[in-house]
Image (cartoon, rainbow, N blue to C red; front, side):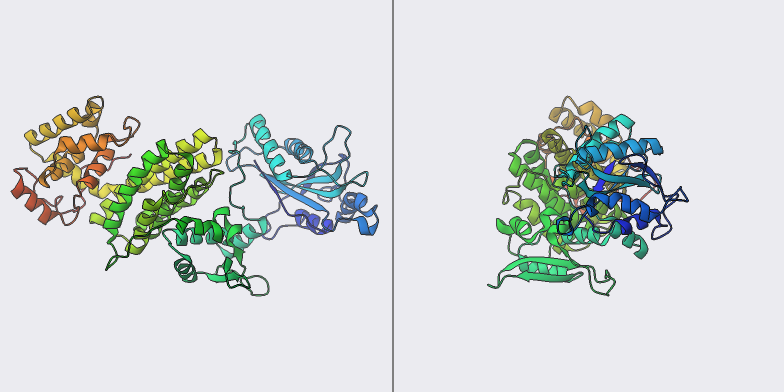
Length: 567
């Protein structure tokens, strides 16, 4: 249940006309009163003898009783209270009780003999009500509505539990500002999936990913948005505003949003903190290939998991924020068939990148450099080495974001932990889509290995991880891991040494597919190529007497054999 308190207004009659009217798209159905300050207010929705003017005059009476100079300029208090999607439909009586509890909790009408304001609760949809009040008490004083938003949220958490509704995670004041109802209606009229504020927030976050200074940041912004800079008389740059080129007000002018209004960490000073401690590597002679950038990202992500698990809070917070940059960069540069899930993961995870624990910048340089390389490496294909390295990077990112969820849970950051879990679910789906083709190829190759080679790799698994070995050998992914170990040996590595190294880098017993985790880590640490297969396999066969067939599967062709497994 979400109470959303709007900025104060100055026309009670205008708000009532909207609430009792048809709505901007005829979405208001059966507008009627469910509760009021005295239980006897006129209801223009269902009483043909009542009018909006009569209700307005009743609510405004304490305001009008004051001398004109003493009346507040903005005297109309307005909040909507909405249930979550999937919640049951509340009755009018239940909504009436919700309204009474919200006005009591916010100080609008505290009850127990204390002076209160006049208010009315209007329902014109199944899933929400609107509460209108005038901000002068019956005795002419102002109500104690300080921090009414937080007080309403706290009361809503209690109501959810008592009514058996979806329980919203409590916030800590670090969330981005939610779009207003006017912004949502405008997005609906324009056929936008998200409001202009939300689109801008997503775009600016992607622009920030890997940026190293003001010039690069503003150059990237100007590539797709309208930008205004705020400059001090001294010439110093103080801030910025952005607008979508096609988002205009009624006068045809662009609607600009300051960075800080998009999210607390998107103000210019907070963005500059990200690169204040950076020492970016000199740019290469030519941009890094997408596959190479993904390998580097996977390595940085793997190291970051340990930091989030065991590092100091400020350092862990920096790594979690930088993980968001890598996710933004992957969403921007990955193939079309994974882009939607990665974008949804990035959208969910942005809430997990902010908390009251201030990030210690500089410690996250490896992750930020990796994000920069992903952006400059450009779009990746969905097959061959690009596809395999994307799957590996998503796999490592999944573990880092899961670690971030656990970290937030330990710190009591409920909203952030929930957001990280949502992001992990989207990454799980993205991984399944991306890893399907390379895993099917490896699975078929593993099934064609000789018995002696399989037994040697199985012995290496038992030696490296005796407690988990039988589970690994029984998993559907074992043939794929065996094929990867064979490739690593052909490249001059020792299976037992590689397995001992990768097994010690994280606790494995909670992984859904241990063989998948081991596979990608062996593949990355041995720096194995994934494309082209023919030359690599031929060279490996000459170096080792390993029976790796040069079949269609070895050429990297997708096959129906070898099931695509769920993580």
